[in-house]
Length: 231
Image (cartoon, rainbow, N blue to C red):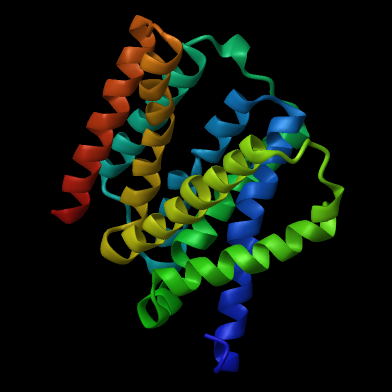
């Protein structure tokens, strides 16, 4: 990927506008509001993807696709907040940073496609993570670690970084090579579902009716959107 100077603008936009920005702005949004608000704002990404495809590629979104995206976003809202809008905390700056996280999803979803086809998802994931990690160290150097380093903490860090971040991102980029970025972005709305399903046996979580409705809405929307985009 470094052999051609023509790759540099796309590579750096993907790394710093996408990989780095989606993590940075998401956590800033949490800091300024709360995790529920930040998550819902980040899941506006499918809307930005539809706008991008319409403006730059002249792809008019199908009415069914728009409907399924809206239903998935409502499902995420119900799942995260249990339908209680009081769980949200939105200041102007939190709104901006949360939406920027959504825009960053669009950037790493669509911009690196030419490089993905040429160099593969593994190559792009590796360079993206490494360069974004270097950028993070500008803000918070690794030697400023403020937690106790012990076997358990090392295990947690490695699990989060390898399984929860690198592997997840690799699979995500591979999915972008195979299907529509709109479908992939909506499918990522199943991420909160994973947390919920794991919390049931691990922490004895009991689902409310609205949360179950949200789960069904997300799953059904992803399946129907996938079929609609393939039609």
